[in-house]
Image (cartoon, helix red, strand yellow):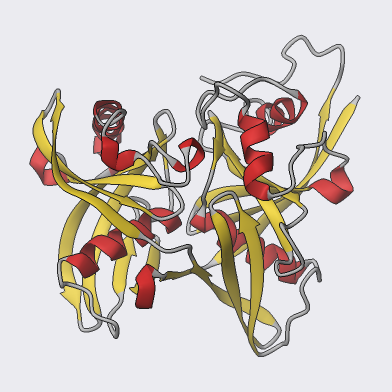
Length: 339
């Protein structure tokens, strides 16, 4: 009988399932750094969405597939950090494999670290939680008031714009994509250019469009990261629309389609970082301004850009449950299925 214990959170509606590797007895992920452990999990010849099957990947499948999970599930395995400068490391995963960055997961991990006492925090004030992820070291600053967590600010690795107005042919017509990197590579496309609105009713069409854009850009040189294949390739496609601005800066809504057709229920943390870089490059976001960024579910992140392409994204995360999942060796469904 295999037993896996998790603590679940949601950040602005997007789930995040946390497994503490030290307590769970997870299969090892060899490597001296979190990036090396992620590369080991993906395996030689694999990619983030086509991982090599192995013991650790079997645990991922168990937690993300039905009947214990669902196609929209996301999570992470807590692993040792690269060095003593971080509190811990994490390997991010989703229904199709592994990812190098996850802003909403970083925020959830900050709340979890404080909630569990792994990182001491005051009743009132802020505490930084430093986390090593496959794309580098990030920080989740947990904001506290009256003994409760009131929000988390995610400081990402530097964001950079790689290409603008790249023509992309889709079944809905020709569109232009802006490509940027912020721990993972995202392509931004204005939804109206494809005749789409960002409503829940339009989600099937948005998903198809996102998959087509991702496929069309698969070999584009702007999607390549100088640090190698692990960080290269379009991870997500952000279909966005402009909303009336606020006194503090621009206001946008987005649907982020990532992996193989998964929809982010939040405004997407690392995706928001790329939107901030693009807006700053256009002169639409100054150092004292914030982007109000909405998801298709109506939840909100606020983001700002600092010097050197560093971005900060603020949101909320809440614990939704603690679970003990079992795999009976006689269960013919094994690690489960996806519909």
